[in-house]
Length: 112
Image (cartoon, rainbow, N blue to C red; front, side, top):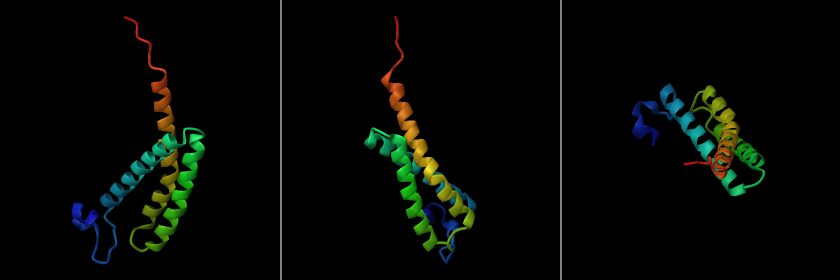
């Protein structure tokens, strides 16, 4: 998919060193982590932070295993940021979901 969007991002040997493409991938990863944390909170309904933290730890472990297999394809800074943002992204999504739920639970009282 990345090759279709930014053809110059991927070299012939499969390496990705084009910084804008790497930043786009990191932003996409954070957005998906936030959505995953929100979905986890919606499903869990209780102990939301604990569940989103557990999801983040599982994603970190799987991400670490996958990143080790492809360690030569991207710069090390990308892997570091990718892994470091997984858990905070999940927890942020969970916190955002709880905040939105609480905000909607007690709507502002309107007087006419």
